[in-house]
Image 1: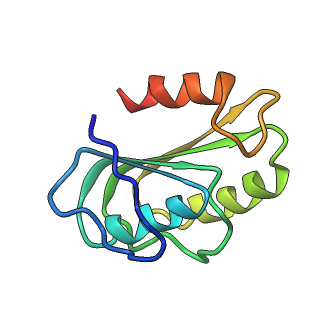
Image 2: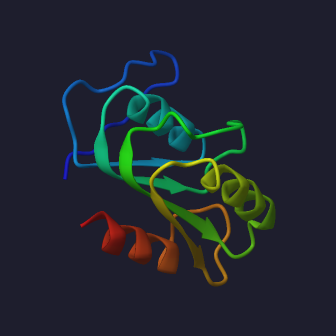
Length: 114
């Protein structure tokens, strides 16, 4: 698995085609920007910041939203966004988790990413 560290000072998306793209928080919004241009099999959006109003232009076979149980506002927003998708989607809620990729959140993300 190739991991890119995107600099917010120089927003250049990686080149190439990928089966799976993952983004966390604001990075999930950037991942959506990439998937509007390039088709991916799986897009994993972790605790996506509620900026987008629609995801209908995404080019993905499946979108998986991951949210922590304590992120009720994120869950509500992601559910509304999911309903705009034209592809298969699901929301995975991590019990007891908040806006951090640690513990069970990290474990589930790694499980879904492989």
